[in-house]
Image (cartoon, rainbow, N blue to C red; front, side, top):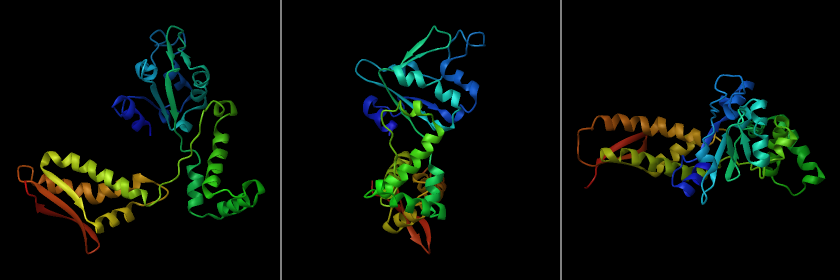
Length: 275
């Protein structure tokens, strides 16, 4: 979502400041954001993971900041962001450098509640009972299964983060897991990406209906989302396709590869293509 927003604003999907919070798992890593404290090596330089120009943006365009996998960072690192979320200003510990977030859109992602939702998807006895009790509560009459899953995520969110930190969010969105029908579109995007990559070899790739159904069946796992489909495409399409293209690197005639199912296996058939 952040990449699409960056592409729409700047024409570049990478034009945002991304901080991988899973690399900041220890308390002293707070210095990676706010700079080393006075008396420590690097305190005068005021170095930080923040990219100031991408955060402050310009007069006509806002900056974009992404804190990815927030829950994996140390508490001290997370709470160093409280002032940023409150007044939009980060003063480096040296006191000589200030980064303004007031013209920036800040996004934070998290996988909190994922384990609990997977347990629910596996229809464990614990979550069957929890779901039953939740729907029997008068306050939940008329609510949907998505509301139940949202309550699971929020309960885990409140366990991980303090109320003053959660209270600083403008909005909290709980994304639904992918349904099987969404994989059709994701499959098309992946095949388009492969065709762009193999265009320089004068090749194209096409899936017939049997191959599409095969990949979607192999690639659909509610617990793991679209990455499971990408693994199925890599194993069944990309690897054999790379082997075939490597054998014809010095051939100039256009070639179309058609993926079909034969004897239960996905096979790439090579056909000549009209120029």
